[in-house]
Amino acid sequence: MQILSNSSDKRTKRRIINVVTLSLFRFPTLATRLWVLGQMGAARVSFMRMPQVGFWKLCGSGTGQGFTPKPNFGVWAILATWPDAQTARASVDTAPVYRRWRKRAAESWTILLEPTSARGLWSGKAPFVPPPDATPPNGPIVALTRASMKASTFLRFWRRVPDISAVIGQDPNVIFKIGIGEVPLLHQVTFSIWPDAAAMANFARGNGPHGRAIQAVRAENWFSEELYARFRILDDWGTWGGQSPLMKKDAA
Image 1 (cartoon, helix red, strand yellow):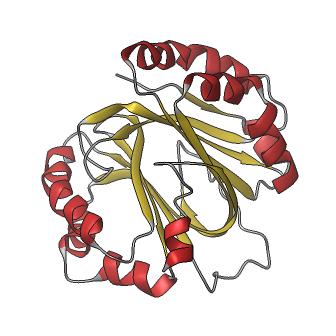
Image 2 (image 1 turned 30 degrees about the vertical axis):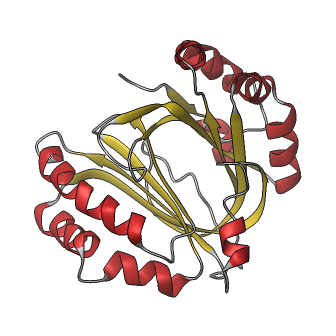
């Protein structure tokens, strides 16, 4: 099953896009899950008609600890870039596509982000452009990794994923995590929130399943395209699991 997506080349070239939203939606019933599957085409048309949006993607999600080859048809995501925070908030709150999805969803949550670093490409584009004066946040940090796997290597990649998912699920430092993707098995995105850069680095680069997987990626050239981005949190609204996921950060 392919998840539809699109972006605007001309709009991205005209202006720097430096604010990002990730919106998650929970569809608990069979009827609402079938509805959102049918909305992939309608949502595509809606985003093509939004002049203020830059790069955008419609994604499904994974089960378990949030990043597994088994899809979760109950959770869907919209990732988009905007010229500024005011436009982002107003668009997510009022644009017809977001309003339709919220009306059908049992729960939704949006996080507003500013890129602090980014390297690599997503569908041939560099969607996240940090401001010229961007600095790493002193507090919570968001990590997004996106990869397109080569068909010849994806089995080796997915054999490692259960170990990675188990470790991140047990890590007491991770505030939030989810795995989303455009095309199951081949195009994957990991999204996680950490209390600080040190906690994130300890997980990513340590001598554990994730660190060993990174070494294998480099040695065996698993990916045809990669993107690594870091963000500071500007705002969030809505709930996930009955509250803002950032409540865990505030309680820590």
